[in-house]
Image (cartoon, rainbow, N blue to C red):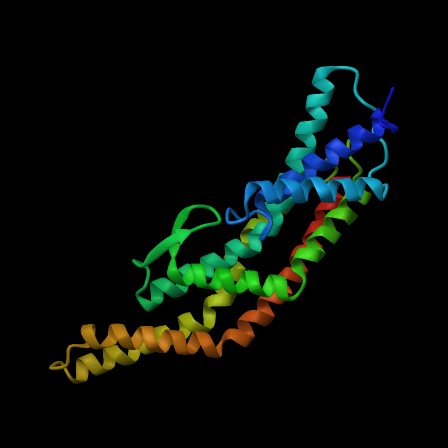
Length: 259
């Protein structure tokens, strides 16, 4: 039975693509932000899914004869979308972690604002670095490359053909561990410079006890921290661009483990 000239197998394939892309948009950077209206995200998911289906990616999928079979395919595609979105989100989690370290070192750890993407309280430095990372992600075309990576993933793992053939859990643990490595790498210049500043202030406090270094040191740390952060932005951006490239390579690696 066809619907508007579209076979049931083709329509079911479109439905599975829709579910996978919806799962991706739940966690993916830029697309998953809470600042983007839900209607806009729903329209984007629907439009992109129609385009991918028209291009023939995925191919027709036979409709299961039972309700449990339908539910199995649906849950499978949603979880795969969640997995892809989670993998792309890890880089931005590392950026926020590095911002937390810098904020604590500068004495701004108690200053927190609302993160509109996940509606949680975060450090002001963490939110600043997150916004810079988002702008850099858009500047290098990360939003377009993410959709290209999704299309390639869809071509490699057609709807209804998910199969765990490798240590997926181990790969996810490795990716999650990269949060701490990348966060430390991004925050290292500022953290090291501020540690040196604290040592110098400690020496001055011992040699000149009549000066109140607690009051003097707090604004100096903030001023010096922002100065080093500005000078370290070229290193920060190069490291982050390299992390974006590694992120897309990780998506291709996940596709190899899931098919």
